[in-house]
Length: 216
Image 1: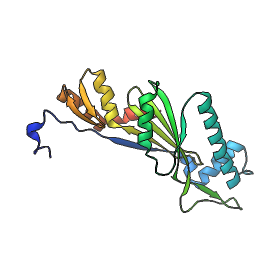
Image 2: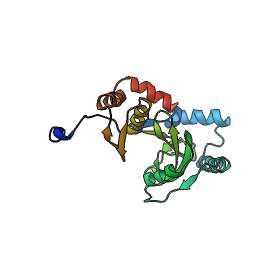
Image 3: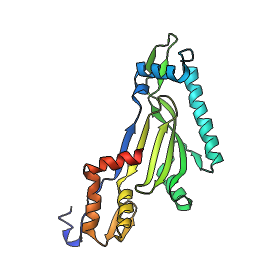
Image 4: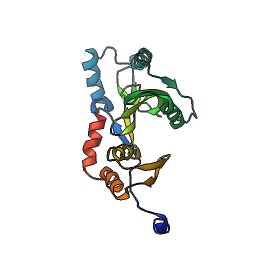
């Protein structure tokens, strides 16, 4: 394709787009480890049962909603079929937040969930159970729009979702490179060679350190 359109191109760049990092703590995702974690959390196994796991998920939801209300952070419950990226784009048009959390979306999705049997034997629920997930949408100075998606049910698996084009956008602006952008595509760039060098940094080993920083 690049060869076919070579006469129309003034430069090219190669950029990672969607970057998804899975996050979890090892104790929570192993049956024996989860038992140890529960003992540390509560002091014993007396309350290690499905009822208390559900109560924990309920408390998490109530406290998060109360915190969002107290701090004027919009929180929206999504229905099946809602186009979440369109919802986020609409909030981005009106938010006054320059850096930090600007929106929380709540939606149901499958996640690993523990099943505690009467004898306190711990197994995975099968098939995967649909539970509430909370997507924290954040504006970061280096990476632009970052999403932290967290399951609200133990063992609380999470994902950190980044956009390579957003990162290149921020870095190009800092470098004084002028560009036009349509959606997720850069269409006119004042210095294609310098722009390509910025995009290339997402594919070298130093990107691991930058990802670690934004995750922390």
